[in-house]
Length: 254
Image (cartoon, rainbow, N blue to C red; front, side, top):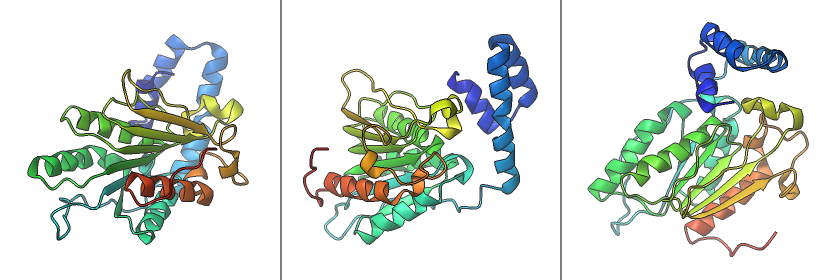
């Protein structure tokens, strides 16, 4: 399904317009599946899913030597849904000595702007690491694209279960995508992740499906609703970030 349709669903809930659009473009069976997808969506909305606080967007602070010790930015999923694990991951990164800040998904544009401002003013902290979950994973790719237009490289981009992603831009030196396929439910983008594609002549891209490529990272009941809180995945991400910052062990082949 085209990304713009899902974006309308997530951002506007313009159900009448979407219904007319669906009637013009999808057969009867697909329409039934599409309509069915609203059931868990509205149940989740009724339960509330936007309680996590927004991050404070501010200029980077350099250390006494005038250099940054690396910058790691994390984005939660849409409205913070199933995203408390991203805050836990940020905490684990800080405990390992890594400066990490977590933001709401809707903050991706001002965050991108602040990173650009830091680069222009000489406050940029390097290496630059972006991590996102679900719709926030889509958005860290969009942040990277904004930075590409300003000539700013991204040293490491990590996505967790992206749902409607664009191609990874060429300024990303390394991208690791952790996702899980979900069988029948792959038809609904908020219930699964998807592999990424990169633009030509881009950096290194690694797609790792936890069900087929990294079963060692699977936990019981792994799904789109639980993957962001996966402790095994957290440990793998922390080690990869530390390597990007020059603090970790050399990666062992899987």
